[in-house]
Length: 343
Image 1: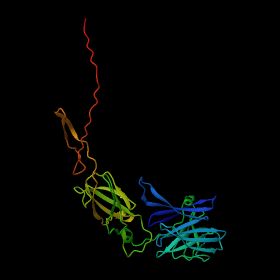
Image 2 (image 1 turned 180 degrees about the horizontal axis):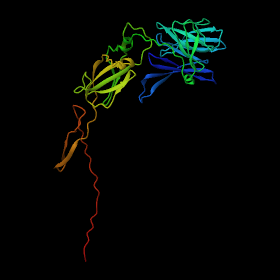
Image 3 (image 1 turned 135 degrees about the vertical axis):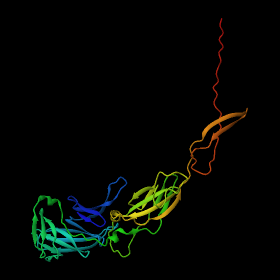
Image 4 (image 1 turned 30 degrees about the vertical axis):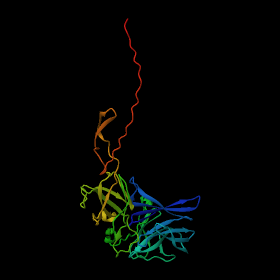
């Protein structure tokens, strides 16, 4: 299991012992589906058993590691929508490996093997020399290295069996993660009488930031009738989505609406940082059938005509209404009259 701590995406491996394949899946801890559940997605199927997985958010890649009989296979994969294996490295080590960890030096990743005797290696068969101490879990014990790479027992509580390895997690400048904006309007894709669908723009981050992995974008759309909703977002309805498509529902036909789109992410919301929005987007819903006419009445005008009166619909849903009056002769049942006479 591995966590991209910048984009807040959790990766894990599911191994099928029958097919001898490993499935990599991910869960976005920020984005949620329409019923509030975290989004889980299939990433890749790999035709071998994978022992460890690590994420490098600075290069937009993840690394899978297989170590068996002191033979190691290290594969680098991309984290984009189109999965691809970028490189594969094979090596043979001199000791049994129990685990591995990805550490960072100035945002540059380094894969470290933890041997089952507690010693550490970086790359293949090179003893690791630490500039800082490293804390990790080995056989259920909490360990720490000194600057020579020797492992020392800190605590041997069984509670640590549920933990993985504690490594360093560097972050880029916070402004790179929290400053985002949009520089063009959303596109109106569908207009109906009762809803409008929008295609939302992709956000723009600072050009000085070089981070391949970024948190999921949160789109907040403030919308309402032009007479009540304004750029202060007061008296506006609000919808939040994590995709670039959204629907504004429960609208009134033949009504002019205005919408403002604001983008944010996990970091900007935690900092209560309000990114600039883009708008307004103005759209008018289509007309719809009016409500029924009211107070229908009729009077006889002549032996061959009648006059019909009614009051216009209370809700018109349009500027012009056509009326259609249908006349149908009523069926008359013939009745026989029986006269009774008393004797």
